[in-house]
Amino acid sequence: RLEMGTKQGFNRVAKHWLDTGCMSFDDAKQQLATEQQQIQDFREPLSAWEVVVVDKGVAFRRRADGREYVPTDHALNLMCGVGRGLSSWTVRSLRDPIPHATKKDDDGNPITLKGGERTAADYQVLRDYIALHLFNGDRVDQSKTRLFRTWTDGTLRALLSEQYTIVNNTWFLDVLSRAIPGGMVSHWKGDADSIYGNVLIPDTIRAENDSDFGGMLSVGNSEIGTRRISSCPSVFRAICMNGCIWNQEMGQAFSKVHRGTVDFQQLSALIIDNLEAQIPLLPQGIERMLGLRAFGCGDTPTMSLLAQTSIDYNLSKRQTQAVCEGWLKENEVLGMNESRTAFGLTAAITRAGQRFDNDVWVRFDGIAGEFVNLDRNGWDKFRNRANNLTSAQIDKRIMVSA
Image (cartoon, rainbow, N blue to C red; front, side, top):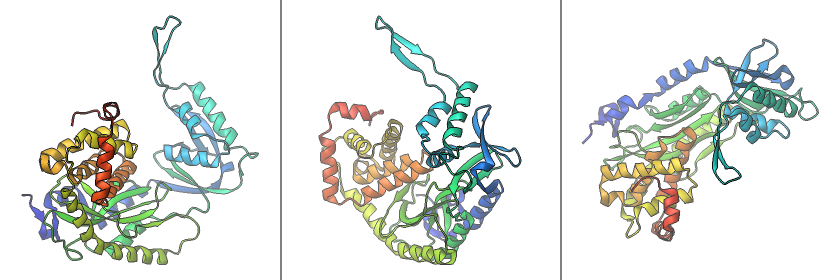
């Protein structure tokens, strides 16, 4: 059995994970402070900027000092929301490499059309397209003040409205540290713009009865509009040294948009009140998670269940493969009997989510939370849908043998 972090105040967390996958609030704030030194915000109108061609695409040039910033994918999406008639699909198609393609000649023989990198001519078309739809006074107000979030690495991270209110990530961590004294930050992802992670609840606040599970809160905030301020209760399995997370969205999940004037004292009180209301829910989440062990797969093939999960949640082929591989790993950890349950499938989903970027990771935790909330009738309906899949439907989804 793993050594637990009892001496550190977390008797439901493996000591290995506390030492390697967690950090204190102070350490998290120090990490953020270092990254935030790269940020520079400009509140200026579009007329203070222009779009230009650079070596690998296009950039926004600030007229006042000539500095150029290459927009991130998120900034490009925001830009398309501002530009009248500006299509994100067209922007990506002119910027991204040309993919290989195959067509047939007059005799029906396949011909490969070679793809490759875009040329300066492509980027000039992209520049003119953006200029026409964004930097054009007949289509978009060029004098209206906007928020340009830039980094010293030469990237433009966001183009936001003047009404957008930045809720600083360090301030958010300060609020969390006051609400959960002694808590540890786990699975901390993102950067100074957007943070994703979990706060482990110390024994001094909430000690759970089950020896393998503990409680935490899933929290996040974005200064550039990728997500709202949010928190919801979660549960985790202590024996899983890679920190596999079991999301349990119960009660009232907190969410706040970044718009208009914000009373930060009031917002702080709302966040703390919400966190204090969520912590008592954690034992219920643990109980529901353990209850999934009683929901067996019966005669439903595992591949059918995995394929049905992929269909229900519109997973990509790569995401589906990750869930399949996650189930194979859970089969090694739990054994066949326990892995072929709703518990095992939920474990596979949360394990798979850790292999992807932040947004997909959070989404997979949410999918797992939906399985945790199933009752027997809901699980049986899911199994019935899986039993009705054809071999062709399963083969289309499953890429590894389960």
